[in-house]
Image (cartoon, rainbow, N blue to C red; front, side):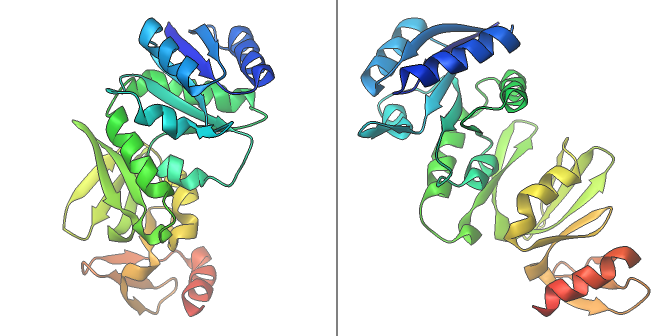
Length: 247
């Protein structure tokens, strides 16, 4: 059973989320509803929760203000907000869950499942990376949290040469020669990286378009990447790929 606290400056939002949890998430017990940063800090100190649902925007304050006043952060966090100005990609890259209001039940269930799987794993590091990813710098400076055998590795998006699928696993090939295998599908990373100059050239390959050294013509053709690896372009992807690199 996950012990949770909800922190949101709107009481109705707190109560709505609590009802969703009670009705659809039997593995979560809500310990407290808080409407200010100070009340949230007090409830966290008193209850020692496993999970905090934290509103990004509160009156005159933010969820990040609360986190800056708590040391250590030894609970998982699921952020929620009614505003989409925060980059959802930044949250995903940092392995931090994020719910847009009004909250979708399936999204809520998925977020809680992820929390159960990685309970308190490197949360402080992930929050630090999230704050960095949210700073108004170039998206090229984003870092992606890649699960490793002993925690998380944060890799700059632009340093990923390509990703290769193997069943439900994905292997990342990095410019420094390192490789990381993750138990997530290539489709998940395709969705996450599509607007970061990555393109799925084949069922097996998602490539960084900025890491191509050469294209060799053929039925589908091949790309030579900056690590000299030759990757096939599928016939059905060829036209879309050539259009992509021509612009």
